[in-house]
Image 1 (spheres, rainbow, N blue to C red):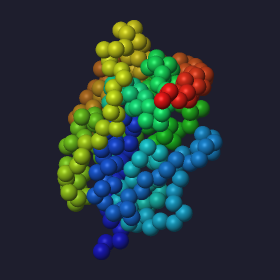
Image 2: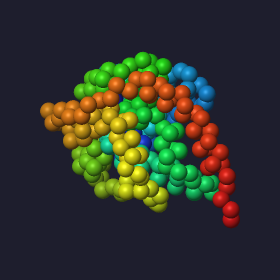
Image 3: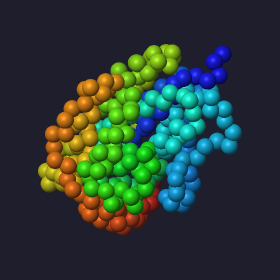
Length: 278
């Protein structure tokens, strides 16, 4: 048996971008020794230093074929010297992403017997351009203090340079085709179950006021530009489109947002902390 399988697939799971379906398929079809799913480091260490994730004390990384999850960063590549690395990620537009993420969180709180709170408050607890922020801060491991200093165009340039080395980038709508090819590459059964962990939809786009929808669009132009350019890229870099919209110079706006987020996070924790009456 080949003890140094090649390549290693890094399956970056941006929240609410079909990553759970991908993870579930991999976890069901590959043996545990071929999967690395790093957990996040314990707080507060993960907020002040990198890496954000932890690794097992002992592990034969020669057996690993896939790395999956929310928490790992690109530094995990150092575990696989002389191995081909294939990075993959799916994204979505910022408005649908925010709505989906909100519904997911509220379902979780209700499942824990807690209370839900309005979308407007939850939105204020989130960083602007949260998909780009996730990729830059979590996966590319750029500290928030550094990101605060970078104009949106520079952040987009960093993302484009990184994504140029990805094997696959596309909208979550391409999940079925992605899993079909990934299964073939990994020589595993192609059948999979689509996983939707959001059972109830508390908010749809139509439920938001026109002014709030417009605010989300105006405040998240970096995520919009990323989606418009890469949503149909797939396995073929030549299919990258053009940046059609103007990216807002939001450096100070993003900094102010990150400074004020804890205030709203405390308010949200208080509201969700109240158990629903039996």
